[in-house]
Length: 464
Image (cartoon, rainbow, N blue to C red; front, side, top):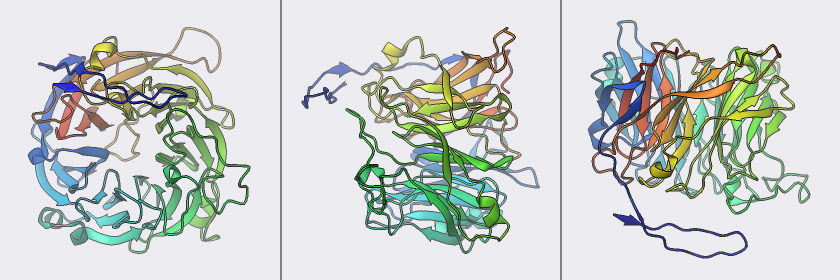
């Protein structure tokens, strides 16, 4: 098969047709990793950026799986026996052909699910809040409405709704979204940071929000604060993913696409939590901007609190490495107002060959610490979903020096790259998201149609 792609030169816009052969992969390539189980979800295995595991009192374990396309929203998989994952139910999009789900968050028996439309001004766009306390209802449900506690509507003439969300504490959801009254200065800047109170899951309400100054037409600082657009790749100044942890409830760690890594002070949320205030304003504490000179699209930030470090990943967007290099960064966050890049993870040794296999090739997502009893709490290991370069594992290795806060080295200790799923339009695996459970099992999803892969790490160094 031959493919074409577009090359844009700085200072000159032109279209160049380049014929490149897609090199197929015949067998699994792996190092210190093995496949435990797999389910293609009835051929509808287009995995998004949301997974969570629910432990039931009777020993049953359910995996909630968000879909990236607009036909299916949510798959529920019984992973009690990881070698034989069983599809329990699959719920369609609330707006087939228009709305995708992509992201979710689980706390106890409340499941929050994102809804994002393909274009602004459409619906449904927002967040579903679902009751997943009754297994019988979960099995019998035929739509999201069958499980719904509420729907938080963020649709609007300039909004696509919720792209990603974080919900781990049973109280507040952290959203990347637009709203009915948002009006960005640039259409690429259409999603910002919003905090929504879910303590009463039947009546969600926003309690705080933040966007980069100059990205909304209502900003009083305009025109002087209008942000400079990166060239030649302009992905937008909008929030991708924000994480806040119960052990550090006054902080949020966010990937803000071309805005880079951002650390927010959300200590004002304590006043809302205590009932002494109805709203508050997050404050930007520290930031690392990667673009320019690099291509940007900062995706996810995962702190290592005991180390005073954070791993940060930039998303690969283009096919065949045409927006490379995309990095997994290691950032020192001891001084929150001055985070500093310390290292990057190594690229695969066969990167040149991987770039020719088809689809996206490079970093995308990091395994999050979901805080729950069914999630691993990694302090020394980075587990990454990296499209056709597979699931890759890196270890932070301390250097034998007496200096305080000396940065560790990053060493790759494992990877798993299966062949392309049958019928994949990418002609390669496209690992989109990954989580790690408390038993160190790794759950990875293919973005196109491959479904769920359950893996285990078999190396000598611990996955901790």
